[in-house]
Length: 431
Image 1 (cartoon, rainbow, N blue to C red):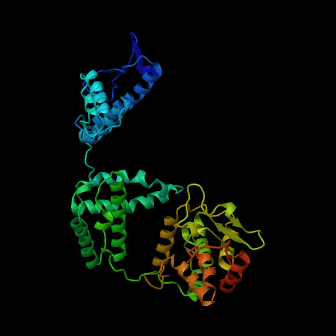
Image 2 (image 1 turned 180 degrees about the vertical axis):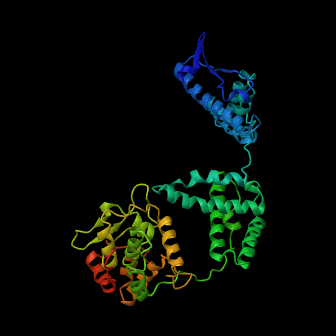
Image 3 (image 1 turned 90 degrees about the vertical axis):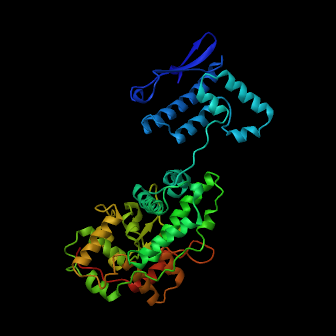
């Protein structure tokens, strides 16, 4: 920053040559501003803020091809007001301030009368631009950074994409209007658009409800941050569609043992894909949880062999209760004996799931079209219930949230092992 600061007499000035990539959009070759101080430290402070303002202004020029950009001009005005020691306020807000502050702002503006931007920023000449719906999704990401903490890039992508799609469809229906102008009629029009797709069989009610929640969440969080008075909770009230129970059907245990665990039935799959099926069959864990395991999460030499599903840096779990230890028995023990270091071929659960489901479909290994690899998780839960395992044991093994407050450390491995041993599949003879 010191490179842009010089003195003329006792007064410090800011001076910066316009960079080559900005020259086509800027009618000046050099930016020179009096910093109005004899103090070097104060001069450097002001120069830093001026520099931020100028770079913001240049970015706006480049973005719009040299045309006016209200959003960039407003942000720049806020920074420039700060350079002069003021919080940015519009004309109405300034008029309500004590007389002393109004006079002080006028004095600064009078000294800088030759600089239009300075006068405008100090006296509130830049109105805050209305935020359009198309800008809401970008404004939303910084507001929900806590939700993305510790997620992997793939998890972040899967979290973001449905919200982007929901906002795009909302704009498609109601138009790209200002956030503050969204009405109940817009929400109802959006709901009707989805209703028409439900009637035609394109989507199910659960999809509609998720998209409604995504849009409401974006608008509500951004609206609160911008101090928009609209009650978005009220706008989206009582619009939920009735969902039909459509959980994935489980495989019958005999089908898993005689078909999915039969060594000859899965010959066309690579070894890791086959072992993922085996691991899911006797742990009930999610594909992503199993593929996310590291060598240090697999305990084959422990008194009770087990895996430890837990969060790690840049790899969050689906829920807090998803962290758990699962004993290895039957097919799952066999799987990890062959994969003591974890899955290395597949690092993305979606890829593995797609590969396996395609193979099952093409080789007619699905009892119905509704069955999928994930059905093994439902099978695991049903098998535990069939042995009359306590619900607490089932919830702990599945990683489900328990009803009521949580007390104690949960059931020890030995207790879990007793119930899992009862349902263990016979391990395959070869990978």
